[in-house]
Every structure is written in C-alpha cells, then in structure tokens.
Length: 176
Picture 1 (tube, one colour):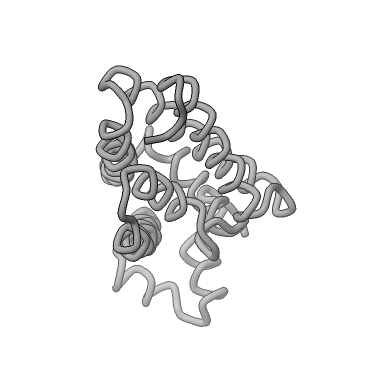
Picture 2 (tube, one colour):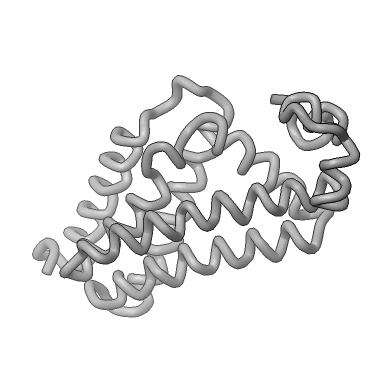
C-alpha cells in the first residue's frame, strides 16, 4: 500500500491489527519483516515450481514449468509484483535483500538453463535463458505498475510463444 519507504512499523502494525512492539519483537526491523515477506514469496514460487516440475516429462515441459511457476496465479498479482518491485529497489541498500535477490535470480536462471541445455547448444541456451528471465522480470514490473496489466494466463502465453519462436529459430526445425 505504501511502498517500502513509507511503510513504517507503526503503519504495518495498524494494518495487521498488532502493536508496533510486536513487529519489532518478531522481526527486529522493517527490513527484516520485508525480508521475511520475500522469503515467503520465494517459497511459494519454489513450491509451485516443484509441483509443476513433477508433471514435466520433457526438457520443453520443464522450461514451461519454470516459466509457469514464475507467472502463476495467485503469485503473479498486482500486490505481489508491487511488493517485489519495492524489494528490488531496496537491494542496493540492503545486503540481506540483495542476497535474497541473488538466490532467486540465480535459481530461476539455473533452472531455465538446465532445461534449455537439453534443447539447444550451451551458448544459445544461455542467451535464451537470459532473454526469458528479462521478459518475466519485465512482466512483473508492468504488473507492479498497473493492476490491470497483462493477466497471468496472457503473460504465460506471451512467454511460451516467445520460447517456441526462439527454439524454432535456434534449431531450424522446431522443438525436439
């Protein structure tokens, strides 16, 4: 509601129906509360990823499962994307938040690269993974700025279509 800078412990406590003392007791600081919220969101993405990967039986299905987990309902919502954008903006000032961002970013990239390496030569897989991560990040930023921005279904369709086109171009024959 307020963004990171305007979200004081007092405002957070009032919204949650708690005292500011409770917030400080359990989290120590607004930054630690924010880090806990980010860990919870990362855990939700991870849980969705594990579930989706359990259904994936080909490298392409694995790549799609990874994308799906990062653009799934209800994770890809205006609220979550707004909080994540605030999180990104604070990574330059907080080593703990920067560490969480590195973990999340590396996990997303590594998982995509693992699936794409089975479909493409290494250098091309690296390029496509970087493009897909940037595309998903851009969709999260758009959603953070506008609650009526692209829906989760449309976002996934857009990224899946891009992946399909990249695979078709890279292999010259389509997906394997």
